[in-house]
Amino acid sequence: MMPCGIITMPVGIEVKVMGTATAEPTTRSSPREAIETRTSIQLATEFLGGPRVLHRQIVTDEDAHDLVLNGIPAAAMVKLFTTVSTLSTDLVLDAIGVSERSYARRKAAPKTRLPINESERVWRFAEILAHATRVFGSQAEAENWLNRPAIGLDQRKPIDLIRTHPGARLVDDYLTRIEHGVYS
Image (cartoon, rainbow, N blue to C red; front, side, top):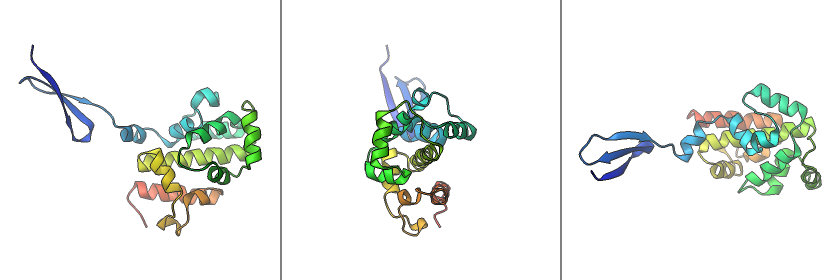
């Protein structure tokens, strides 16, 4: 029997080496590659608890529209808050425009559905967090970026801008420019 070993090559490719025989390449995706292969909709859905909490599969913008229109389950908002790791609860509450008292009511009644306007703000936050996660390669980096002044946003913090639809559009457009290497 020949000795076997694994050599890790750059870009996440491993080569299985058996004695002097030819190497067999195998690929293993890194956490960053796993994030980059998922869409913002998929990541946003995961941040909200996935199909188990949302009671449906969200794959397209139309699916997201229907989810928001029918009201996101309050349990999804609670899941979003448990998913966020570095941003304070107060910052996230401000970003989605919900008071602590309203959040406590939602938390106490997880089977209720959020009103459309609240559902839209929760979805918007989850989708922007997902987009930033894809751009920066990790959720922690995305959350840190959301809470720092950004040059392309006139030194405003992205988390402060996502409180409104126009501000959220500015943040999303800026993330797209970063993603494509256009930082102006």
